[in-house]
Image (cartoon, rainbow, N blue to C red):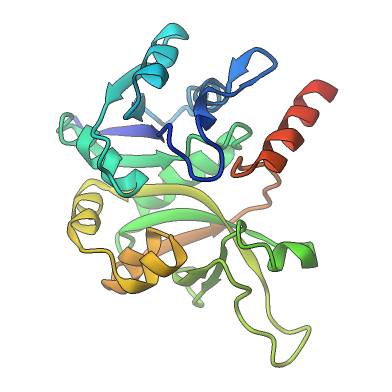
Length: 243
């Protein structure tokens, strides 16, 4: 029987926010906030945290999560997920849910699962959302995406894309970092070497596009906080405390 698994990569050595998964907000570490959202996804059979750090491993075990220890040498989250997926041959659809999205909308995860199961042409599925603020277009922490007429990604960038030679024409979308993979697509992508565009932008999805793989996007309204910086952390903390 084929299964759908959500795997949450969580590493300690983040360049911008060291030890991010373990930082507590209202007495709960960030990784627990993410896991508690993930377990509400009805179409997922397994939820696994994948980490390279003993503290994160012990923390995840303490709140009841299934967790796997992985190598410290992985270059990106997808490589870490592959190590886990190799142990579970019945995982046919694998969802990469970032460990720094404590307010992730479960409807988005359900949509990613739906698309990767139903679209025979898609290697990968993901979510994009309209950008409403001009300052977000210039923020390198907010990844932008351009799509074709069928909703497949053409390119992702930390820069503003498309460039506005003519104003008030283009639509702008931000990328929400959830990926759905067919099993064979995940293994295929991670076997490719990192191309220059991936290294330059530090965006692993560019490896898939560079090698001709198809990424299907779904457009959804999405307002959440991915925690990349101390400013993001403070904003999330403020939202939680106000609630």
